[in-house]
Length: 103
Image (cartoon, rainbow, N blue to C red):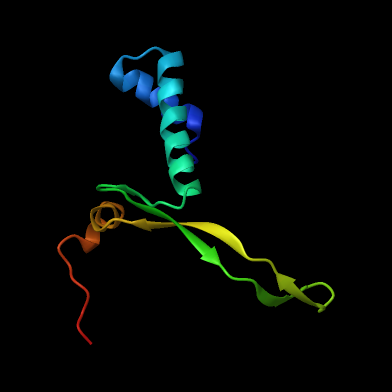
């Protein structure tokens, strides 16, 4: 199942008692703040959830898979997400309390 922005808005309205219009604005403002922060080059860290970060990737050589022609892949910025440890354990209950083995 995919959760949409509308689903989030409805959930916020149901759990907080806000009107639909107010919850929609709250969700929009939340995502706008994340977008603006990342666009300015700063990271967004949400405790218990994870961290969004912007990475600057250099240009690099690539290959067109259809023609085999060499092409230059342009430099770009990408968004990365790293889940927090607590979020990872919520998604994988069997891992709760387990630690990586020392090799």
